[in-house]
Length: 130
Image (cartoon, rainbow, N blue to C red; front, side, top):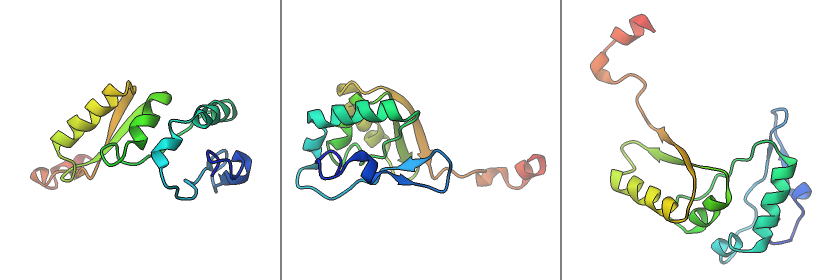
């Protein structure tokens, strides 16, 4: 809604129960969301929030599902790739990383979800020392 000019950033930002943590919801669905990331309004929005906030985290769509994320990533300071074990194949991870590299995104790391804390082959041995 902010990028479409329907509301100001101040109207849309929501407070949270945590001090100094605010949240900007995604807003109203639009016909061509990927086009928003190509407009000058996005660049102006990014400049404004970089002036007003210390840390900014974007939660975007999966890189292989839509082009939005690959268009947004090069405009940001860094990109974290999130994947799930037993769900995301190595080929998909490679493809996502290659897509980000092709768009000149700076990849700062990977977050791997769904990892067992202590694999079963350790049994209770680790817990003895934990």
